[in-house]
Each structure stands twice: as structure tokens, then as C-alpha cells.
Length: 320
Image 1 (cartoon, rainbow, N blue to C red):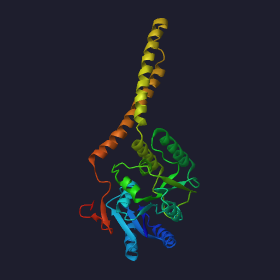
Image 2: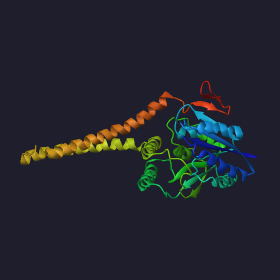
Image 3: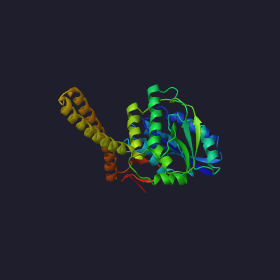
Image 4: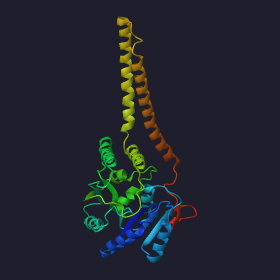
């Protein structure tokens, strides 16, 4: 019998956890051909998420949990879940029920045919989402697909079922600055997509503000494209050429009309423009340098404080 591990990153999800457990149990009961394991990753929640997971694990031996020492982010939570999973197939799904659990049987049916290594969900509508947020999301996918060799499908979610072979490839990528949507695509393997319409949270509040999503998009661009560095170099060459042309124009104007000091407001604007471009380029360099700096430190992706999986040495916070 195939074993399916359902990996659920959790951050302050006490309002929705009982609802999620009820719904995932319905899916399990509808799939007698597979054995289920529920693996919740508590990402440093400050509410009752961890006590609730303890209670659930005492009542149901299928429930496993890994609890971090602090909030390390969803990317770290997904990585920890994949490391601790024992199933033949792994499903990553959010606890807020925005990912339709009804797709899990369809994913299992498709992946067990052997025709693909991953069945992923793709959101085709953004109903109920702020228009400005939706617009920026669409622009992000268009931009990153233009400047990166790694294709990221518009509307792609982390919600997907993967084979153990694909998961092993993902875990081999031990980079600290993780952008999983890009990693899922970069490792290759055959992926089939399931489309669905946007669903509102069942309870609780979203943890992703516009600013957090913006920073996350920058991480994705920096992780999977060096085009911004090339743009900075091209801008530098372009402004050097413009400066030489400007010098020639000033000399000719002085020789013919004796008006070299004329137009100082324009000069101030040009200085401000060039200075802004320089600061932008320095900022781009800073982003790549900061990521390299963090990678060189080789800090752990996460630290486990408590778990009932038996896969970690809690005294050292390390996996066995």
C-alpha cells in the first residue's frame, strides 16, 4: 500500500487547524488504497498551534509534527517537512484550506500512472484578491519568465504531490535563500498541472502582506536570474556614452554660442538621474552580495525545538 505524507506548514493557524483536520480525514477515508501520514511543521507560532498539534498527535497516531525554535519562514517549513516525510508520495498543502483538498485523489491517480513525477495545482483566477495585488502578481510571473531560464507557471502554488525521487533532488539543493516555486521547476521532472479557481481562507488571517510578497518576489528574481546584474552593467556603459556625448555638445556650444553655463537646472536633473541610477545599481549588487554572504555563513535552514517524529536530536537541533 502506498504511503502519502501530507506536509502542512503552520504559522499561527489555531483558528483553522480543526477544520483542516476534519477535511483531510474525509480525503483519507475516501482513499482506502493509500496509507496517510499528516506532518505538520510549526513555524514558530505564537498562538495555540503547537498545543493543538500535541493534542491531535495524542488522539491520532497519523499526526506527526515538527516545531521550530522560532519563525524561520514557510520555505524552511516546507524543506523540514520534506526531510521528515516518510511517504512514497509527498503532498505540500497550506492549512488555510485555500488549496482544495479534493484534488489529492486526482493527484494520486495521475502520479501513480508513472507518466509524471509531480502533479501541481495552478490557480487560474484571483477573485476576492485586491486588484493591485493581482496585477503585481501577474507582472512578477511575466518578468521572471523573461529574465530567467527557469520557467515558473503563472498562478503556480506550492500545493503539489511529488515522488520520492523528485523530493530527493529538491533536498539536495541545500541553499539557505530558498524560492521553492523556482526550485520545483529547476530540478526538472515531468509535471502535470491541475487548474482551480481561487478560494478564500476558511478561518484566520493571511500571513502574507503585500510587502512580504514583494520581498519574496525579489528573492525569487535574485535566486534564479543574473539579468539585474547585466542591466546594471549596461546602464553603466550607456551613461558613460551619454556623458562623452554631453561633453562634446558642451564644447561645441561654448565655441559657437559661448553658452556653456546655460541650463544649470537641466544639469541638476541629470545629476540626480544619474545618481539615482548609480544607487539602484549598487542596490542590485547589494542584493546579490547579501545572498552570497548568508550562504557563506552556512547557518542551518531551520532549528527544531520539539517533534514527535524521532528524526531529530533535539539537544543539538540537528537531524539524525
